[in-house]
Image 1 (cartoon, rainbow, N blue to C red):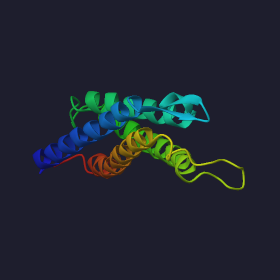
Image 2 (cartoon, rainbow, N blue to C red):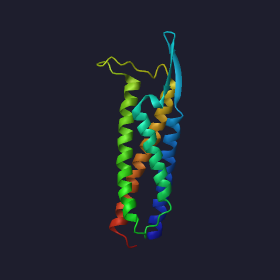
Image 3 (cartoon, one colour):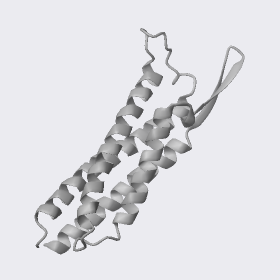
Image 4 (cartoon, helix red, strand yellow):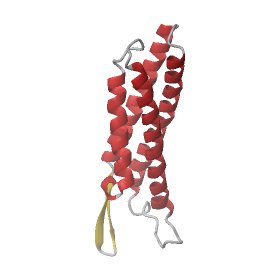
Length: 159
């Protein structure tokens, strides 16, 4: 039974690593330019602090997931891994929430504040951001599943 738990946990960590790394790469490579009223502007992920936070958070989650792949269930560090899994789940959840809020404003605008939607002018940028958000949401959900496995491993350390 312990071997099955280890295999499932490793598989989920690999999926999280792939999803978080994909979210980071897609967000970092998202850029587009447009010309409006003879003024050109560039849309990059660095223009919105929420997208920067999202990219950094997913990069941290990728690195942590990679390191956690090499830790054993039987080491005393596993309790630290559990705490870091909780932290990563919360971090990814907060980053996807804030990035989704900014993406929604970019797509729909805000008539009360007078903000116009920008996705009509920079569709490639919006498509990249959408892809990154899907991968980031997948990473957050997978981390929640991983957290449930970690809780089970901490509460039932014996096979």
